[in-house]
Image (tube, rainbow, N blue to C red; front, side, top):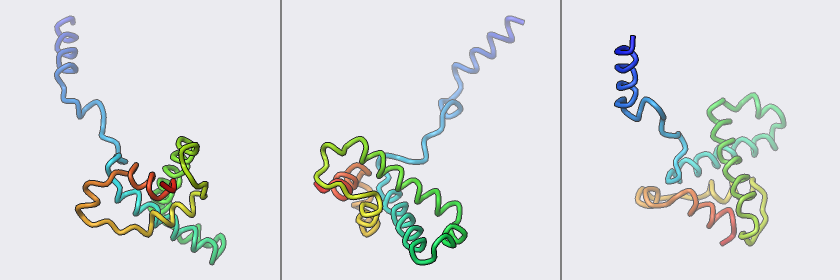
Length: 124
């Protein structure tokens, strides 16, 4: 019985790290995800203004999740950095600014989410 526990213990200790934790889906360096998510948020809420509550029926789950990611990032950034930011625009105005960005492939590889937030959601 103790041999079984010893083997189990060793296999747990030597198991690859991949078994214990997955890499998160939202990465600090993934600026393109923030831009795409903010484009979704602007699209969803712009169509909501035009069509009322029917926009909720025309929005897919993936679109809603991406829009929610943008809104969540902007709200958290606003809460954490409000004392350092010059302007106090709401999430929708900030999302429109971010959604209008067009990063080149090289810019996308070198630009972080924080770079975008500082420049376009904070008024630096």
